[in-house]
Image 1 (spheres, helix red, strand yellow):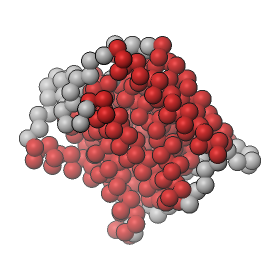
Image 2 (image 1 turned 30 degrees about the vertical axis):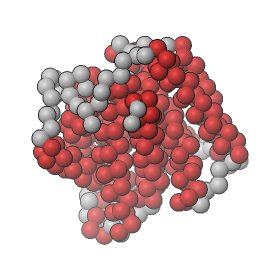
Image 3 (image 1 turned 90 degrees about the horizontal axis):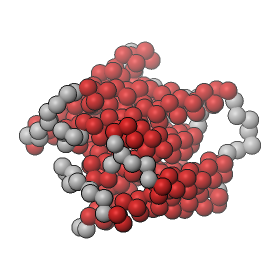
Image 4 (image 1 turned 180 degrees about the vertical axis):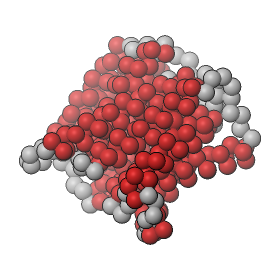
Length: 303
């Protein structure tokens, strides 16, 4: 498959997996505590990643571990703590719109500290996509008064987006000496271990044997698709086009989440939300168009 097609396809599949995570996450927290779900999710993901690494005899790389360790703490533990606690205070739709659309701008800014250029075309693309995001968010609001609790939940989600943006840039640093699989395999167990005490504060994990089959199916999706597969694929995209452009993958998430919400949750998007989705896609295209035209090197991924 041509390089020009493979990378956007990988980004789209990643975004689709993340969109599914918002739907399955919403369904999962309806039947189990959110931090316990996060802990079990990443413990399963960590075990699977270690098995994959051992089975393929993958090289875990060399160099300092601090970027990978910090990425694990921020991207797996702190991010999930902020986002899932935020979801208990604000609607899931807030998270699906705020988090994925805040991340690209934050990542692009953070990536300037590791040598990535913030080109005029990228800035234009971010601006256009952000207009689309604003349209989606405004169209999705209801007439009810926004409470302080909901506002705190939204702020927590923004803090989660900051953690994810930092996680992406730290992963870029780590991949100077490691493959995407190696970075995720090292980071996931670190994040899972950090989550264990947080999950214990809810019900002490005593309720896990009573989880329904539906909860377990949602958790397995979050672990295997939303974590293992999508994280490896995302870092593969990062390696090819850089952290700033790869982070724009998340701009697809609100659009895809709206579609999945219609199919699986029975939601009905407003016409203005659909217009906003098209504007988002146009912004993503603008931000990535410059990369293709100037022939910026796109190193091969490890996958």
